[in-house]
Image (cartoon, rainbow, N blue to C red; front, side, top):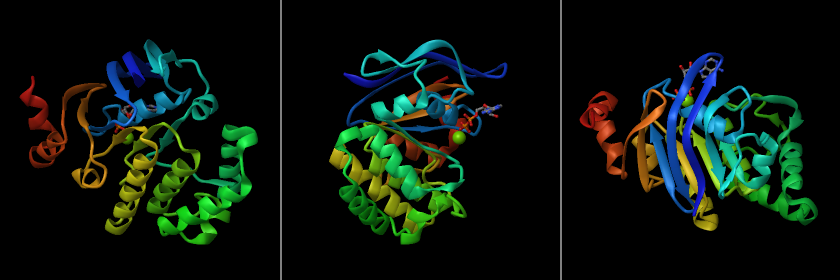
Length: 248
Ligand SMILES: Nc1ncnc2c1ncn2[C@@H]1O[C@H](COP(=O)(O)OP(=O)(O)O)[C@@H](O)[C@H]1O
Ligand SMILES: [Mg+2]
């Protein structure tokens, strides 16, 4: 069964329609990449799946395991197992990374939460992602570079263990070595948990590490072409203009 299903989703912000009759189905264990020109609604899609209230659903539905979640608040979606690694993660001063992760995991796991294994796992992950050990005790993303913020998103993903992973331009801001670390960390998590992954990216290079089963090209609020991973190579070679036109 599809863990995530999006039917004829039309979404507005203010009076501007951004997603237009958008459709997508994702099964557990599938990796889908979404590419497309700037401003076509890729980030909007990820945020509306996560439940960002700034975006208004005017039509259609978002279903998780067959249940419509259009009106479900963000924290409940997170508890269900949906995770968004944001394109531009915000900094929150005064709440440390450690406090945040512990509270989020405790909220999700309830009585099953185990402090010791939490500490051990955070330690392991920060080493694996080559993050400074003090980062865990600093404010969330406080003074973090763009790339460090992206690593922090991946750390959160690994701790929260979602079964629907949305990653919005997780490669932006990463140097080549960090890109490899992040790509491998995502794949390790994928191999461990077999989640559904929806990946927004502009670059084929991320897809060398995280191999998509499906690639979709979005334009003006909807998917215009879908294919396998060769579609991403074609886009890289020929650009969106040409690839978008082939099917029109
Ligand atoms: N909070 C907002 N207020 C006004 N317009 C927005 C807002 N968020 C997104 N948009 C507009 O919606 C369109 C799609 O944005 P976005 O989803 O971020 O595109 P993408 O991620 O594909 O580059 C853009 O034209 C953008 O300016
Ligand atoms: Mg975006």
